Image 1: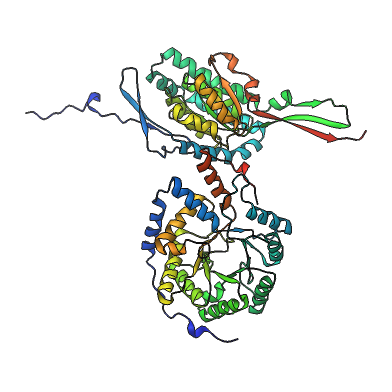
Image 2: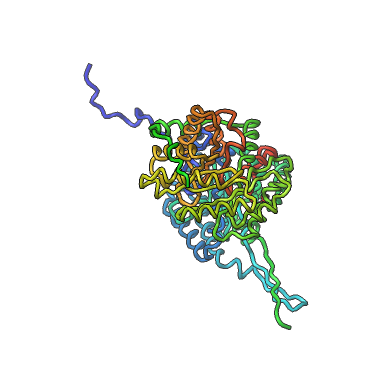
Length: 296
Length: 302
């Protein structure tokens, strides 16, 4: 038999499936549980492995977010804004990768392009608000006594977010950007059905000066994790997107235990410019009013 | 002064460093869950010496600490009390007053803590003043300088003399293991301290970066075990510095149980010197009770 002189063809090579990791505290750990779920394309072929994050991963992520929060809030608004612009630049530079990841999961080329472009724009939109929110929404208030009375916005603290299932990338950015731009830190659970671009977005954040712990991204199953998102006593605000109404009540009760600021987003058209609003930033801000005595 | 150094131990067992590290790493791989975890956490709480040893300590700070010792977490009244509060000698009287009517002991660091670089007379005066103010326990530091220059007899005599000055107060001997260099030296210092009359041996002052570790504590526990086989006397152990999480504290308990046995699983023979450990333990206990992860926001600081 003649020796096989043909070079091995593409069809003979076993492809290496990437395991998409979590993004916690500025690093990319596997889940401590060791569990992964295969992600299938439209034809049922495995295209990647995705970590199935556990409640302990969530606990670690909250600890990282807590540690990072004060430092992030103390940065100048201008600096936070620059860092978000930088993330938008990096996202723009990696458009190709994001588009192909969306297409792998069944999006058409045109839809993928629109989602990525919209994501970049949304990041730029929110980056711009960092040094404007205070002067637009802060106020000096008329009072009847001899006090100088003024109200300022302060970040709520650690925000836990369950991101919408679709669109995977745009939904995540529309939830994370308004939360972090004015000083909160975030632990976000990425889309269950379309997690790839969310995890890749972690790589973008990692290379764009966003300090470790400011954004922590988990992948995994909503049903397993959302209860812990709502009950964790060290989480100050909860953003729940497209939560099934039956589960929503339970989660809101858990979340009330430490009076989390709870935001529900339902039936949102994530591509619409309605999602670009300073009121989305205010959803995770607290108003602090100061009474400063003055001479009569 | 009567020289007691004739009672000094002559030879010290050589320590197998690789073996110790390997053994110590095993203690980190046990899985302690549910009821066992709650039992362990409660045991840890009962062994804590709540500590404040800052130059800036005030009477007010000590009152806060004592109030924390009296009332660890108001939402959980059935908790065990901590073993002791540990303060500087000048604050002993205030601590004693605040803890009247409780079983919480007052420990004082004495003998020119943390360096130990003072004349013996000054160290004795320091110790006696703390005892006179009511300290139940004295934490002394050994003279590491003398130890390193080979003057072990001095170190031995000094411990014995301080022990005399303590009267009925318990003596804990701080070796400051981070300054001793090797596990062999730590073993030697442990043997000296026990033989000279220390009731407890303690790893560190908490004032230098290298404090208690599992391997160091294991070497000291083994010294305690050998001393028990020799003499029938049970010496206590106190790791201090750097133990700030409940998880790590439980690993120490596992090591204690597997090295010295159940007889040592009591605050009379094992202590944790720590300032932030108590709140982490409380947080974990509350997590076990409620099922929800906890925040430090809801635990009193001291």
